[in-house]
Structure formats: C-alpha cells, structure tokens
Image 1 (cartoon, rainbow, N blue to C red):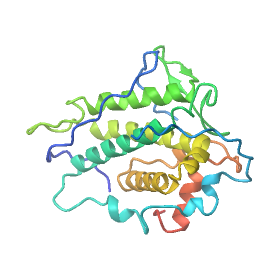
Image 2 (tube, helix red, strand yellow; image 1 turned 120 degrees about the vertical axis):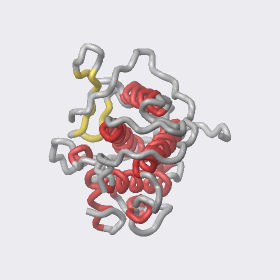
Image 3 (cartoon, rainbow, N blue to C red; image 1 turned 90 degrees about the horizontal axis):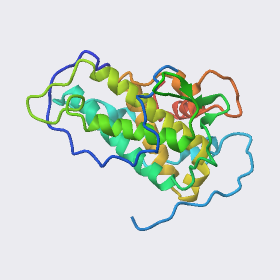
Length: 254
C-alpha cells in the first residue's frame, strides 16, 4: 500500500520523547543516496562463525510474535494513513533508541570506527560542505537520532494540533527517516548482535526488526538495495540475508 497520495488529517499523535544527547560536531541532514541501573554487557571475544550469529539457529527463529507480520502493519479501518505512518515511525524510533541506549557502552569510536554493517556495507555522512565522510558509528547514530527527534518535534513535519494537515513532502521525509533508521538496525545486527544475545534480547530485537521491515514493505518505504548494499560478499551479507531467511520462513512477505 502506498501512502504517497493520501494527504488527509486524523487524530492527534503521541507526545515525543526527549532529544538524545548530540555529538560534539554539529550534524547536517543525512545523505539519502546510497532502568534498573543495568550496565551494558561486556564485549566478549567471539570466534568468527561461517555466517553471522543472527542467521544461525536458534537465534534466527527467536521472536515474540509468531506468524506473518503483515497482519499487524495493515491500515486499521477508519484510520488515516498519514497518521498511521507517523505514529508507527515514532514508535519505531522510540524502541530502536531504547535498544541502542543499552548498547552505547559497547558501541564506541574504538570498537566501531566506521558505520559498518558488513564488509560490503559502510555508510558515510554528508557534511556541511556536501562531502561524503566516514564517521565512527556512535557519532553517525547520534546524528541520525538527533535529526529524527528534531523532525518529530517539528509541528510542520509531524503536526499534532487539530486542523493541521501533513505537508505534501511528508511521504518523502518519512522515507528518508526510514532509510536512516534502517542503517542503525543494520549496524547493530552486524557489530553488536552477540551483545544482544548476552542480554537475551534477541526475540525482542528480531521482532522489532521484522515489524519494521514488514511495515516498510507495506507502505513502500523499504528498498531492498538498502538491505544488501552493492557487494556480493556471502560471509557478511548484511541483514538482506536475514530478510530472505524470514521471507522463506513465512514471517515476511516477498
């Protein structure tokens, strides 16, 4: 289902969460071209498997939700599609931000000097001079999260007051947000999945990603090339291989 031509107004969206702490450099708009005092888990030495842990059984099957995720992303009856997309993007951002917050002590400039999601997937940032630059993963992610939070707080982008309509550019903006949040997912799976396993959170994180992918597919936000990158390295396939595995399992539609 496409929402690119649906421009009607619906009920008020939920209150936004606080803006994450920004990095020391001032972020620019990203490129779209290609509590219980629990401490973060340690970074154990993990032997290099023949394939990523997230593709290995039983981890690939771990989930909180059984069945096909299409059933929970379909537009409810009488709900405005623009409002439905906006609220879901807010929820995805909030949940992903909370997961990343648990892993921040593991994702450092030393452990993650680039925003990598595999040998064939290395994301770069467009700086204020419009040049593509490599950033450490925590800096890149902080820029993304701060940028998204600022958009969520902008009434001209995510209106919350009665009588306000979504801007004509809203579908395009949401697609850019989706792509950047997907990059955060990709990095966490590639670089920090063993720490997610240490927390025994793989069912939660797998379900969040599967929900995210199903939603993106349903509303034409997801482009498969963003999952696979431009390379063909079978040892580090990015989460494109996970998408295909879940599709074969019937969790996601093709």
